[in-house]
Image (tube, rainbow, N blue to C red; front, side, top):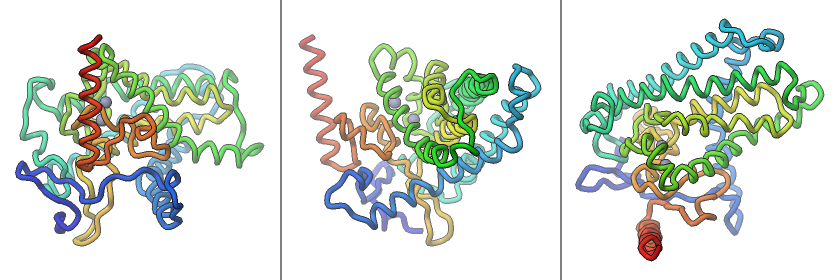
Length: 334
Ligand SMILES: [Zn+2]
Ligand SMILES: [Zn+2]
């Protein structure tokens, strides 16, 4: 597939889409129904539908009944942790293997012209981004996320959190389920913005940003504090009457959804002339420029509202440079 029909490649080999990023169509005037329809399709397919499917799978085959979860028992906790490990290993491993090892589409649609394996660096354990990111995802982020998930399931089973049932309030719970990905985006924006504050950035978030050229395993490569804040999105079930299924869904949104933005390719080729948009560009720009696009290009244009939006255009670049210059001047005065 000719990726130059969809974008340009510079002398360094970095590819950029011709189409600048745009905020969700609900915030634009005049309203465009076709764009809204496209947005809703992109919202559901492929990521959120896949994540919903894994949640349902876990709910029926991994998560035990409420009576079992009343007590903290190693059997069900280890089963859940093992399933989370295996599920994530298969999912991230598949993407890594297909696009970064077998390189099925070589460098077509790849934002950064280099593969991380071509750039060993001392910032990574064993000088390998891949091994470093894998170890942090596996032995830091997934266990922490699972611990939060276990705590919340135990709290539901013991009646410590406000719970409603599907029988009594099906419509309410469907609406909550549909809103969960948006809650995840908003939560991520604010915690992410917070850990970019100087001292927290240095202590916590710089671990994630070691990967300037992110690849699938970078998704959950985090400092333990960041993993706790990130998977902490599930704590929202304590504030809003909900259901343990939603707590599991939050874990899956955070664990599997993290791949969006770290895939490194703008489109994933399906057949010779069909390619699936990956929705990765906004967060790729975040890894490239650090202080832009704290949120993926989500339902609420939070970056636009807070002045940190970069749409990939030269105008976006100019706005960013202007903001950086102002910040520098402010720091010099202070
Ligand atoms: Zn990232
Ligand atoms: Zn960041």
